[in-house]
Amino acid sequence: MKTPGCFFKTAVLLLFLEFGLNFSVFAQWSQPVNLSPNAVSALLNESMGPCIGVSGTTIHVVWADRFTSKKGAIYYTASADTGLTWSTPVAITNINGNAWNPAIAVNGSNIHVVWREIDTITQHRSSHYKHSVDGGSSWGANVLLDTAIADWPAVTVSGNMVYVANDIVTSASPYNTEIFFLKSSDNGTTWSTHQQLTFATGRSEDEAITARGSQVHMAWNDNRSGRMQIFYKRSTDYGASWGPDVVVIPPYDYGTMVSANGANIDIPCAGAVTGHYQILMAQSSDSGVNWGTQTNVTNDTAHTFYYPYMVRDSNDMHMTFVKSGVGGQYLHSGDGGTTWDSQYNMGFSNITPFIAYTGCVLHVIIPDSGHINYIRNPTGNSGAHCTTTTGVSPLPKRELAVRQFPNPFNMQTMFEISSSENPGNFVLEVYDVFGRKIITSLFGKDKTIIIGRDKLLSGVYFYRVIQNEMLIGSGKMLAE
Image (cartoon, rainbow, N blue to C red; front, side):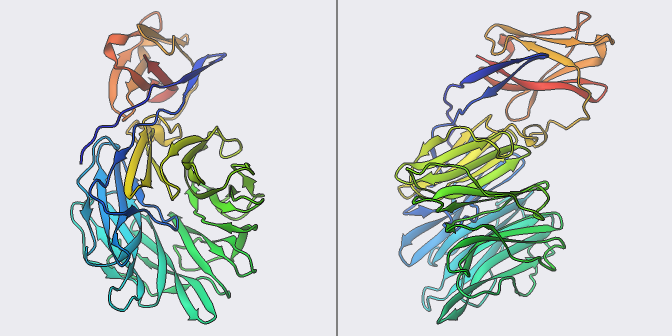
């Protein structure tokens, strides 16, 4: 199915500063697109294993379609143009099997998918893995990851290292689950033996995992104390050894995930700090060595919130979660989680939305009425990848005064630089939201450039001014 995105009108706030002006573009979320038009009962992962993964401008999505209570398969679709058009969904597992709860990790053209499979005859639960090396065009054979009773596998990838964690039933009576870990050092071709990571009575489950370089970070639900709490542990040597279990969010909690961006590690969850579950978050700014006091992100005792999932790009943080009785919500912080904007109501059902970004574009998938809906915001992300991932190469900076006015504009806009140097050395570049360079122009003797509205369609654009491979200034502008 290929469906173009449709966009709402952009709302713009102008903030005039001493040297020119900047502006913030508020939500311009598209109308929903049904990614699973032929599904019987499509669901995403209930354990916060992400069902969306990105690489460059390509988005990959998986879900489970439940044909009956004992029959289902994992489906896959992709978009190579930042969500504007989508491939026809294909089943990547046996449609006569019983597959649930997929999770996906993407690195370039390598796509790694894990899921929980229930044997249709013995009802035995186990974790499975499948790999595509060509961006989802074809898929390898199913790989059985364990023979024990296992649930909720999670997967992450960093280079050729692929990591999987799942919770395995170690005792049926009294009931006990522990988290186990295995890895592949050759991009999913061969796998290590299982390594047990938790050793406590009760339920250690619903693990989330992410990796950056040699570091692997994991968070999970754990009731070893008699109440469910959020625990964290990390490895700094590619999963060879692990640090201690650390309680990062102590109230009655559930439904966690872990995000890593540079040295920033963020762990949100649903926590019962009052009579209602709220979205709580623990944060570390030193790669998980130290943790600050948990924060209450929603802080709304009148409503219940759960199923948080988030991505981070520098200080730009994007979170999705469910508001009970209302549906999926989106929340943004531009200062690393210190403050949060107002919630944006995406609607749909009360279960598990997932979010990702490609450059400046935000992507959300959320189930509703047995289908998987997709919505996008073409200018929702303002972090570092808003330029670098879309192909606008990062440059060393040398700040000078660059002024662009008016902004927004409907006739023409002017760029002006304040410098005593030869203006011929200054170059203006203008990019669209997909990172395509659409204007290159040299400044005139009066150190100005005028861009006519006839050169631009309505929408948001990004500009930068360069001098001798140095970034002088950059910003956003809106053509009405």
